[in-house]
Image (tube, rainbow, N blue to C red):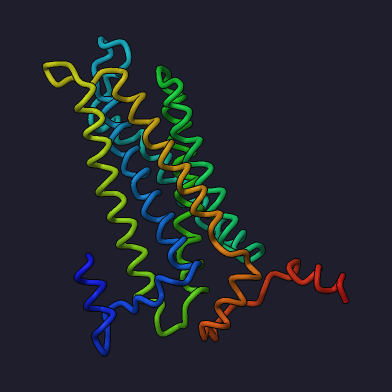
Length: 249
């Protein structure tokens, strides 16, 4: 990673212009992508494992592989529903609000099962919140990146954001697997503590996504920074942002 950055800063035509990473709208969005990638794959590992454990354990649900897969379907559906909602919020308030709301929803999604995960509705509610949060956040990320860089650099900036998300998912899978392994019986059966700890880890990491989303510039500030960076294809500023200026006039 260090070698890549050093090379990219010196070559005449870099694959990724590292100056983009100094734009607050870019690095803050990439940080949110990294963190939520961690949390998203945490749920993809924890929930199916919990559902497939034998009910005789006292905390498993004894579901088959196919049944546990169906429990993830509501998460995907909520992503589909809340993606367009993120677009509506973005047009009115900018990408910072849907990113923040999405991160908060993910925190709630893991806090609920960390406190209690002994009933099916708790697992389903967690999945619904996860889908809503991921749908809001991931849809808003693209807009946040595109509105922060010139049109000629949207491809590389968006690609770095996708890479950040992938790195987060890889780290999340490894960390959650380590938590489960560290809290397993000698025969390799995860204990109830393993899931509680795993959900708390993901909830704690998601809190960092909330803080990172707050680091994004406001819609007005982002507009000013984008103009300064040479972005020419900006959408109009939300009308309500001009109200204070009218008041001062």
